[in-house]
Length: 298
Image 1 (cartoon, one colour):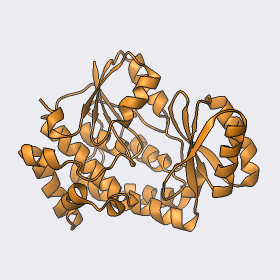
Image 2 (image 1 turned 135 degrees about the vertical axis):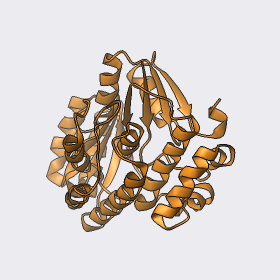
Image 3 (image 1 turned 120 degrees about the vertical axis):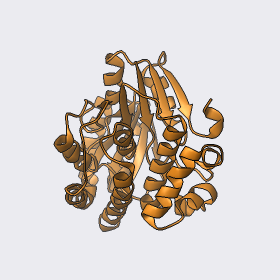
């Protein structure tokens, strides 16, 4: 059994998708469609930057989705038993599974990025990665740091790699307490406190936006970030995509669910190799193939 997994925001880099577009007509068609749908030259931003433009939340999200789908189409839309994506990548997984059309998903993730950016301006915050500490200990220091402000566990990525999100003073306190306990804590260069209660206004806007999105039953298993379990149908997909904005991303749970299904072969489709690195921490024996540039497609 095999699975396709898709990267999230932060995987972007200048030049992504360019070699795919040059070599594969199917990939080029995806970029041309994206340019038409969004009304700006998304391909130029992906290929040439500047990086400051590419990392904007409302730009990076449609760019990463487009690059991932271009890579998938360049592969020939090879079938898979299951799909999952990290945060934004869950939308790509749903496109892969036939639950949402690319033409619906692209403007949707652009709006998602805009809603998240607006929420970040309304209630500023930041994020930090806590390394080498187990979940219960991180949850304990988050509870203690809450005296300094809003803070929550945002990503359970892999053993020893947990991300927290919230108001600046509270995230600083988490970092202080983690270092005091002998662990490493690194502040992240992000635009806001994603996957935390500070994103509530973004969640509400996205929930409203999702009401008009056509969603079908997935043609393969799709595992949700919010629950770490397979989704059951269109109504649940809508609810979980809205909740995802303020809920922790249970990536390790998602991967363990897939592994328990007997899946041993994974393709990380899209920019970067972040998910392969996380899988090495979760289950070193699992095989993860990276599909990014043209040279990665036989």
